[in-house]
Structures are given as C-alpha cells and as structure tokens.
Length: 233
Image (cartoon, rainbow, N blue to C red; front, side, top):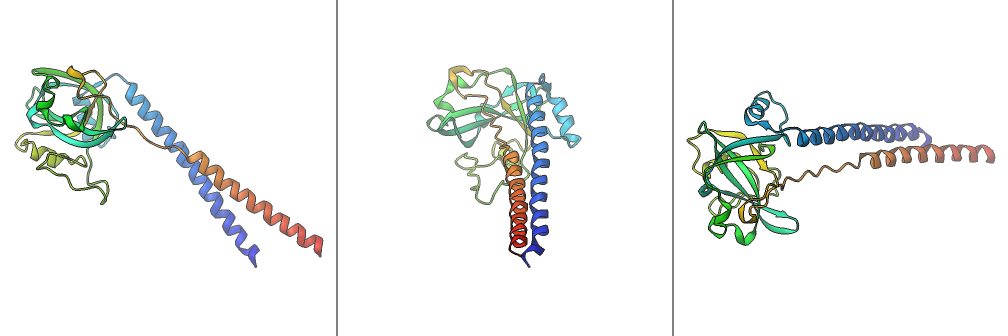
C-alpha cells in the first residue's frame, strides 16, 4: 500500500528541488543587477524620479544630488551599525527647485543623537551627495516593529509620510524615495556614511541539493525494498 504514495512523494520532492533551482537563478540575477547598479556611474535625481514614475525598481541605484541640508529637521532612525547602537540620520535636502529629498547621511552613536552634540557634522550651504537610491516603504514591515515615536524623534521604520509631517515639510513637495549617502567622510567623522546593508541570503543551491537528495534517497530505498521482496519471494 505504501508504494502508492511513492510517486506522489517523489513528485513533491522533485517539484521543491526544481523550485529552489528557479529561485537560485532569480536570486543570482537580482544580485548581479544590484552589483551593476551600485557600480554604474551616478545618475541624477531626475533619472531616479523618471524610474519611479515608470514603476521601475530604483533600489540601490547609484545617484547624485545637490542641495542644502535642513539640519534642524533631522529625523532619527534607530539602528545598529558595526555592532554599535545608535541612529541613522535622515536629513531633508532642499533642492534648487525648492523640493526636498530625505538623505540618510549615516550613523551616529546613541549618545550623539542630538545635533548640538556634533555641530561640526552640519555643513552649511550647497552640498553634493552621492549614494544609493532607496525605495519608500508602503507600510510597516511587520506588526512586531514598534510604532514610530515622533515626539522623541525616534523612528523604527521609514514612514516617509510621517517623517515629512514631523519635520514640518507637509507644505512642500518631498520626493518619494530616499538616498543613502556613500562613505565620503563628514566633518568630525559623523554621521558615518556608507551604511547601506545589502543582505540577501542565497542558500537556494543548498536547498535544491537537499530536496533532490531526498528524492534520490526515496527512489533508492523503494528499489531496495522491491528487490528484497523479490528475493524473499
């Protein structure tokens, strides 16, 4: 009676193995695309805007923008970087046309959250920033993520609408994406840029080998069982 279920189990194992192979090809293509975007010459913000309008994926696209930072409107995103707790500093950059772009300038330790604790890190006047474009989030990533504490200026997830409102920029036009600044040093060493983390595990080959291995083992055990029955007979 057990032999009836062998083809079903085999089909399931082979399907899972093939699915992991397809996922492997997809993941390798995605990683190659990200690497190509990061190493491409920086595009201007207009090109990133056009890609957003067209519905294209802008994550990790190399980009460059110029404008003036509004340091008094920093938003602070709770983060851990290189084993240290602190914040990513998101500062609105006012472009020459009057619009705004939130720039993740980088990491500051927990005790350097307040701008007055690092006055040298707030350059005046026109600045040119190069980094990686990051898409906005449509919603909170998980119910386990705490709600943002706007009163204390501590954000647990990048809610662009609330970052805009809490910074008092509702009357202006804010671009619908972020820019993570690269590792170009800031005055005084803070914020520390180049904090973009690209963590896309690629274990699909291992999973595929596991499923195909189980399928092979199932076939081997079934054949051995049939041969034993035939020998006993």
